[in-house]
Image (cartoon, rainbow, N blue to C red; front, side, top):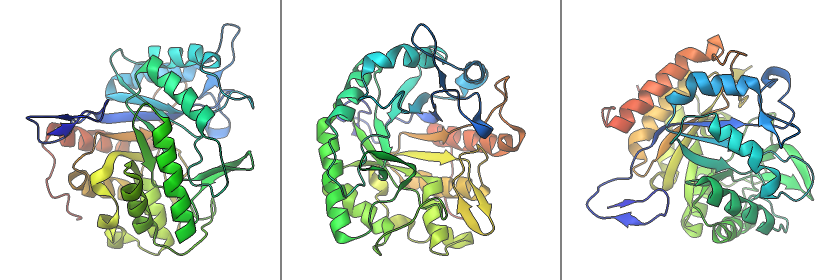
Length: 339
């Protein structure tokens, strides 16, 4: 039997979940992005907003590479989000991609890692309305502290790695799942040294597994986030595979990969489109160990005005695409053993 990726129900006569394959996730800020990502995002127009020409060029050139697509929510203003204020723009994002592509959504408003009281009902209602319109198969958000006292953070902090922090985060995840009318995927948080800091001393892999079990939650494993935690603990080289089995691998529905870099011996989750060899090695290791995996998502590609990927990203992008294709088709190495 297998779980239907839309409803979560089991279908008889099957031995594993239907594999979607290779997916796309894009951060789409309002105003068309900045710095290295200038020209990537949404822009205001007189008729409700649109994607930038640069994003449209990428969709035309690379849209057929993917089986599903998602974007990360960015607020248009400080007002409580209403679907009516966003759907014209979101319509245009999906219209630029090939018809029939699966759809998902990355929220940034659930704030599931925070120890503070937080009302998730507006974000859940907004998400449910969008899901009804677009047929999102799931919504995902990092288990992080995205804002404190209403002030957004530049990079989400991991939840406090303490017993009280775990109890609160588990309760937050369970509450969020109850409020939603579509499956919730909780993403393992990032531990980028210099971009965030850690409170508490519990092992993050064991913490995440306990939370997923106690909240009965599906999870997303961001490969860069896993490596950022391993690097923080001094687990590099072949040791990057240490304790991976402590994670809730059977609950994993999605892997994420975004551009990362080692800077002066420290792991940086830069989202610049260029994948490390280590990310591909860990992905190959994880694929056969996540029996309920639906897809592998390439996050935040970097591309030129004509839609072509930046040169430095092309090699490992091609390798990842081929690796995921072999996994989807059942022709990948079964053991995923580290080499």
